[in-house]
Amino acid sequence: MIGGGTVGSGVFNALARNGDLLASRIGVTVRVAKVAVKALNEPRPYRIPEKLMTTDWQSVVNDPAVDMVTELVGGTGLARTITLAALQLGKPVITANKALLSAHGEELFEVAQKQKTNLYYEASVCGGIPIIKSLREGFVGNRITHLYGIVNGTCNYILTRMKNEGADFETILKDAQNLGYAETEPSLDVDGYDAQHKIGILASLAHGFWVNPKHIYVEGIRSITQTDIQFAQQLGYTIKLLGIIKSAKPATGKTAKGKNGRGSRIQVSVYPTLVPNTHVLASVNDVFNAVFVRGDVVGDALFYGRGAGKDATASAVLSDLADAALDLKFGTKNRVPPFVPHELDGAVASLDEAVSRYFVRLNVSDTPGTLARIARIFGDARIGISSVIQPESPQGASVPLILMLHDAPNGAVRKALLQIGKLPVVKAKPVMIRVEDLA
Image 1 (cartoon, helix red, strand yellow):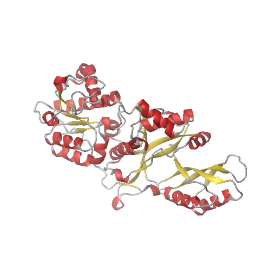
Image 2: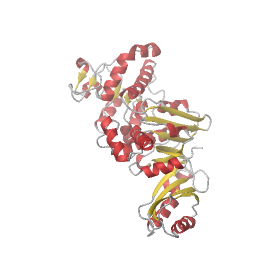
Image 3: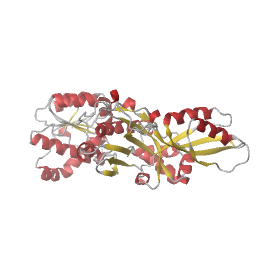
Image 4: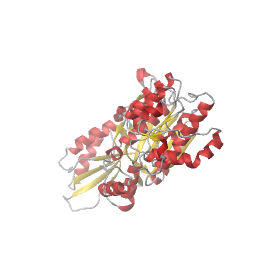
């Protein structure tokens, strides 16, 4: 094992507790030979015997007695070096590192294939939820048409408490930091980048071409206010940060084609979304994760559980250790390749092409003709308004105006809102949140 901190000690503890059970189920005993750590005396949730620890990771990777390597250090620098070193020796590697896979997945998979070994990464997405194995093996006979994921527990915790308690974003974020649910520097979570790493991996597995994270549209939750949450609730929706993967359906309604007019184009995005209260994803609360998958054969499937933490992650690592041990036992180290690129002409579509419904919040001056001016801009852009909510107020006061829009291309709505934002009666930057009916 490389890494003996929160996750690493969690894996060590889980293996110590259930190692005999694992051995009885797979017929192979998995034993920790060495653990490379940053410091022997660093604090860790579970004790690791000092005789197993070293600060020299190379001595662990290069040891002929070590059959497989677990990378649990995090980051993309040293983790990449360690993973490449082990793979080049032909040793299977188990990792929980979504940032590493997002940044260097293609390179690592290529090296694993060349060296006839394997890279296992169930723990990299959604902790204890077995979504990687399900996409790669369980749904191997399905075309995945839709995938919606609540894949960041920090954001889900904040949005849940904002809805239930009526508190604002900053107040709940501080509580989450005090409770250990959010980092001191929270941007990786609340700005959507952690979810970007995860949803890119899932999109690649679901559609057979490696998705460059630079092509994933990302929007976090900092801009979500109590006003948005309350009006969404009034309309029958809950706001969730969703990772979204689905076939791109431009305004023509036809499936968009990929590179060279072949393959398919998909939408891969992370953004706050209005989810109908009647859908099960609206009921996924606090730090829990959930992934909703629709396949053309299986139909709808839902995965739910803890997406992070030492024990949930350790459960996924043990699953990969079992697979790696069995593959070594039977001499089939690359029985299930880490990634199979089978749709090389696929591509990620621009978000501007994506069609959906929208929740729009405007802060406007309550004067005669205000709604007419706004409706005219939407009408000229061929965007329909399905409903309007405006609280009563004294004439001339500044009030929220809530509009629900019919299906329209994202680009058309974005351009219309730029025009609307320039109207003298509009007192703040328009807020737009996309709506997913998940039907």
